Image (cartoon, rainbow, N blue to C red):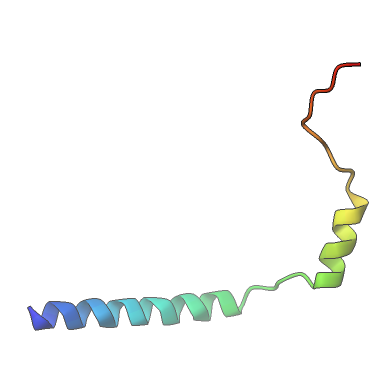
Length: 51
């Protein structure tokens, strides 16, 4: 039973390390670029207002 708990803990730790290694290679857009992209796209509202 103890071996099962240890295997589970090691599996979670190794999985998290592999996920961290994988996501470290991803490029995130800078905050300035993201902020300017939001202002360039027109906002669409789903409110149906009667004329």
